[in-house]
Image 1 (cartoon, rainbow over the protein chains, first blue to last red):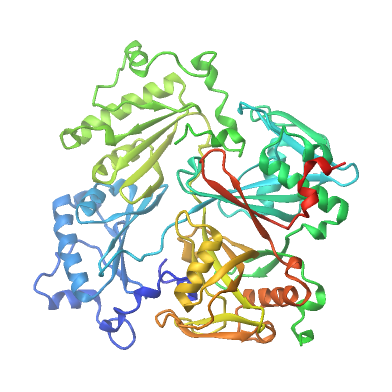
Image 2: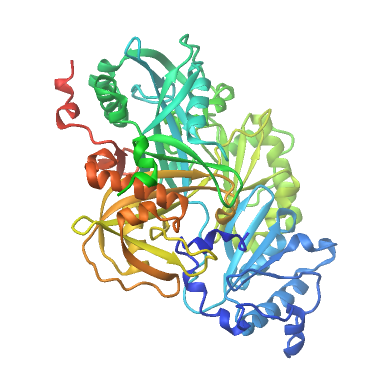
Length: 320
Length: 320
């Protein structure tokens, strides 16, 4: 996890983790395996079957899933091992420890917490705790900070009508674009078309991004930040069959009417006006278009969204 | 947390949580407090000092921080209470339970896990677990899925030069725009200017977004998704004093040269060409500009980014 090349791309978090590395020698790493280090100290941690792995940033990673018979390891034994180990790791100049705990071994979390470990993140059946060993505040990278919501503005260019819904559960029923939260690993455009289909029964195709909104401390995001993207979509089906559990109403509404009405959420009104401008003056005026590129680190493809660049500007040989 | 109004805005996750509510009566909620419900059952959970709170989506929330003397609560007692409670909650038609556990009470996490609870998220000194009680797969909203990285393309329009850096820790030292991860609650433009200053010593001002990239299963994001935004910035200082720990080199480079060179990361080359196009033909061709609006739910302001809309299009009265 921490050995991945990403941080080395200078996204700004690991920059301060470097100074301690020279302690381990010219290569930035110790040439001795950990146990040999331990044997040199006066307070060698008892062997309990956990072998820390180093990362290239001066940190260590310990996974309790390594325990062959975790049920036979007492909290007191683990407490002594962790206390001795932390003392040793600090002496060796390691700057941080990552502790991975399977949920069924969670009784060890409180033990670690008593020694200063805190939760970094947890999901499903595993928690990851950290302890900063170096001077000053922790400079470890934080976990995901944003949820991503995506809505679709589906415009039928032949009729000038746009697909809007009213929520069933809202006190004031304002018109809005159908949308929802992005699922893990889902591309922005796919969230838009999936949510539009689930809510309205309309099939559509992604054309471009229209807007990005950022909100912080969002109550619906468990206090995290919220990014909300509205996409321009083109419909490939037209017969509405809306989700009765979520929507009170669903209509193809004249775009000019949506841009004017007060019965719309503020962001819907704003984007309706933007969309109307694009509809009348050309979508190239409003579109943030998408291109796909191979990703160096994951072997997957990534999508890059920006203003359309004329073809001759994409070709470097033409630049003077 | 779950009572917040956000979900009612139809972002698509709570839609399927509604059908069970009528069990509680016309108002969608039970009119009896939980303990009275419990007294009617044959298997009333023992009183251990935990009082579940209901949310309006048919779920319950239990916080172990309510325990007045958690050290005196045994795991076996908690196990029986949770087992009996889960049975009762299911019988009452609740669809899900949220269990909030302070890190020092983590010994109860494994107990809950044995009854099917899993981690929803954890941070710092607290973990939140969930158990889905209704039929089918859990339809609870997921936690933050994206980290956000922001870089700044600082262009000095008087010289046509742009600020670029080379990472100290990268094998091939390709030019790139300075940037880093967004801190919690930080606006996109502020991340860009802060990171540029920290890496290069250059002060700058946010002008517009230029591009958005989405990558999934990112090794540097603990397997989560990564959003990476490049902003157009204008410098207000010009004397470079770069971070030696992070950067190997830092320069004001001619934008045309950056757009042509092969010694740049692919995304840097692409955005350099886009920026050059804007520099020569007008930034209005490439900018995704920002406006600020009051946020309904948080009392804060949010920032909305989209293509600049001519003034007369913003005024609804002009629309016909």
